[in-house]
Length: 277
Image 1 (cartoon, rainbow, N blue to C red):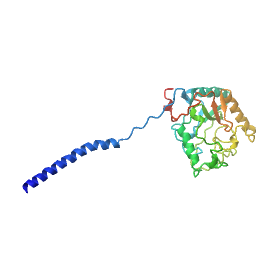
Image 2: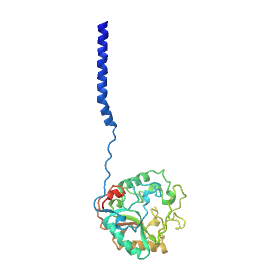
Image 3: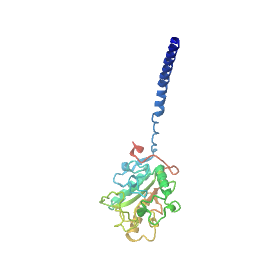
Image 4: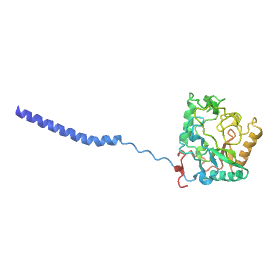
């Protein structure tokens, strides 16, 4: 019996040693599996893109998609900072237009410039979610959300992602401040009279920015008087420096020829994307 107990003790000791060795080997392996996977570095803008402020700091920037005051009711994917990024030729053309306008007592104000593809993808996801209509009362009061693709208000690609397209308006100088949007506030249709819709320090263009309505068509015949004159003034000024207006949106202009006519970029809207430019 004594020999049996001795053998059993030896066997138990060997088993314990084996378990200890196995645990020592397994622990590093578990730690390696649990370690976070390094994130892929964000893409950077290629040569040819600049921050508009580095070309003309006098142009007013009200980058809507960094706020909740959008047709989505939230900040848009890819907009990290409220900065306008454009191709250099487009930025220089805006600078030339700004010099002409400032002599007449006006300034340009940009709402959106380069738009990453991830932002466009966000628009598409939102448009397919027919239950989310929180901002309908302001941005698309007369349009059924299930028609946004068919009517051309939302698409899977945007010229903004090529870097030479800008959404903008005119502001009479000296520029008055625009109050911030308060999420949940009462919404007014974007085509209401200027004194009733969301306050904006821009001149009266007949509708607000991003108004999904045919009244936003630049030459809609229902827009007359001062509103029509303001639209034509903006269009004429920008066309003289190489921009082409999208007829369906009085605020939408593309500089021609485009520096990247066939490329849709996805770097974030962030000064780090154009660092040292």
